[in-house]
Image (tube, rainbow, N blue to C red; front, side, top):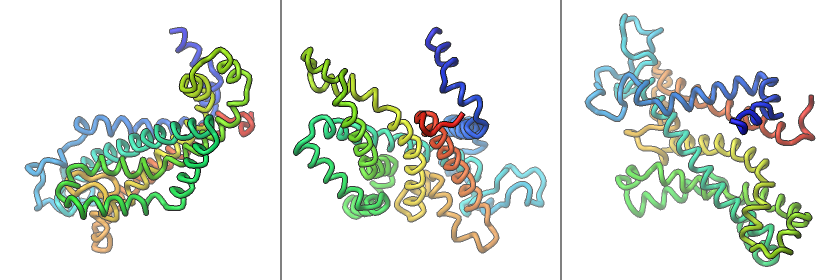
Length: 306
């Protein structure tokens, strides 16, 4: 209880209470997380169950454009007759899962490499930083497209559809680790010359303990800010790959694959199949980015203005 009380009285909470944009962004993002987590309970239909999908219900307009009263499809249906509201809830769940777990993989690789490079220096640092430079010369989408295309060509589309979510997490995570590595390395270079690190060396603490127990906690602020932004970037990357047909399969749609599935029907009048998932994706990304901007300002006193 004491720790909770100290947190509620902290400067972090004080600034959050004074920033209306941060509160709204957090509320919107929290709503997305809750809806995604409770998708099986909130969804009126199961979009993964073929028995609940009727092709005769395909391209049913949203309830405010539907002339038939009592339509069970609040946001309409797609070309397969799948309820859009249910598909969006499940799709948001998948997009958030890919975004969060891809960032966790990025953070694990990047923080570990950044710590080792910054603390060890010398050839170790040169090797990892040149590797990061090579990685940064390729865009995330380029690395992901090449990796996913090779996997599909080697093992087939059927196997890929079964492990698509894991492959997306893997390729997006591997493609973005240099962002963490370079930031953590810069922080470690500044921290390793401080007195508390010298004191830890003098008393004989091993390198691993010094890096992870003493230096790492003092580099968490930029890591938190990067993680917030990278979650949004990972979701955008997944949506882009799904739109290109290299993401989630049709029977387990993410927001990106939902946008892709309705793109060919935009000019035929069934605009909601693409525009509603696109609108949901835009609101999700904006809320995450605004939270990231606020977090950057709060954790950097030089950027915060009272």
